[in-house]
Image 1 (tube, rainbow, N blue to C red):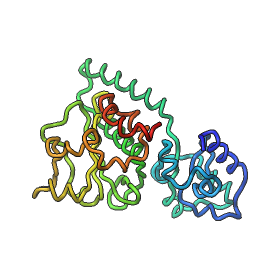
Image 2 (cartoon, rainbow, N blue to C red):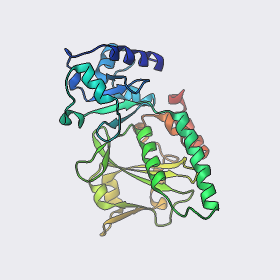
Image 3 (cartoon, rainbow, N blue to C red):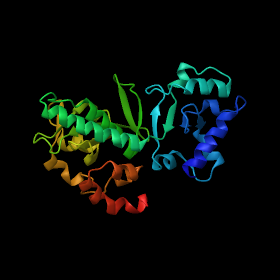
Image 4 (cartoon, rainbow, N blue to C red):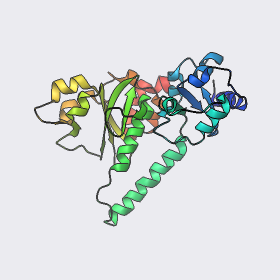
Length: 277
């Protein structure tokens, strides 16, 4: 199903009320072209041949996020209008929304931010500000691997999940890695199933990705302390540019190639070009 047909289906569903259905108990909803249009994923899977499950939407570039964690201001009104009942706190905690990001605007914003950072660095104003790169790197990981970002049950903040399994994401910003490696808290690795390291170049594009099983990280690199250092020399054989071991975890290869640096994109193109085309 192309996007035009998909959004038409969502608009059509939102025009009518569905108080007599059981869709109010669903936990996955797809947002349409307008911010006040939604549809249960189960409805799309039932009514269309091209959407079988969530992976079909993730491969088309959709992201999904916890309703409780992110702001979807029109959803509650839509829900209560559609189903004729209040959206309870218990129910809202279970709901995730699939939505399509505006990649052109995001790409343009990244380019503008990069230019702004250069100006501030040359003016000796900006010394170190990694909050943006960290959040951007996490967003890249969500796009590429189809992660769900939900409110954490074990700590303050949020968790990333891949098919129900917890993912620890680390982001390194810079054209070169530190000789000490990427620092990861041992306790966070022990709580997770996977560790994904996103390496962003100075221009905020992805220059490398490393996807590791947490059990492997603990077995190979955990010492006696509370911190694990993942050095390039020890893990570079697992980099995406050199290994396709975890390439099957990629849900959106188009986003991976789009947001990668030219060097990385060229290395990955041969493996993913058939999927993108």
